[in-house]
Image (cartoon, rainbow, N blue to C red; front, side, top):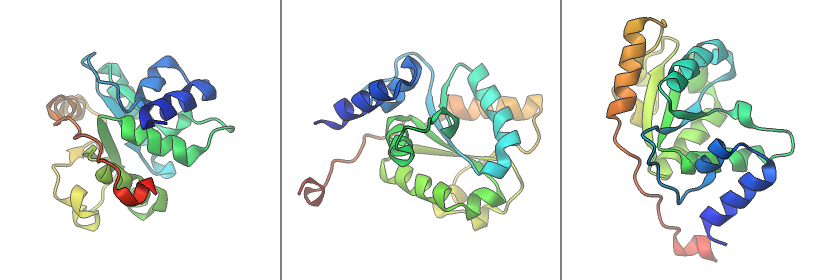
Length: 175
């Protein structure tokens, strides 16, 4: 079964909303002007992330965080499928994000899938402590929610390069 069909089937069976189904559809194209965004964050940063999500949603972008998961879902497969379907992988950068094994795995997978990575600092941390893909990027300052940081966030979202195509499975994946 092709990957797109597989994830559409999972999305339909899990009862998720129509807007979220597009995130699972790795063959869909985003033509509505909004960006499909996956947000990777550490649990301790939830308050800062909630403000970030509110601003992203106000800009009319489709955003997914793990709050969308239900008990009957295979949560890790759902997360990986959502990363594949996203246009943008946002890192809510903080000291706790840097020490999270799940966040590191999400980032590793997003990079392997050619997703565009946008680091947004929600708590102060030295960028040199972050993985190279983050340390080398322009990090959006969102330490304090102000009109200026909201404008900086919207500008970063509007100017991000689109995600590259998903890599082709290697021959060893097929066997």
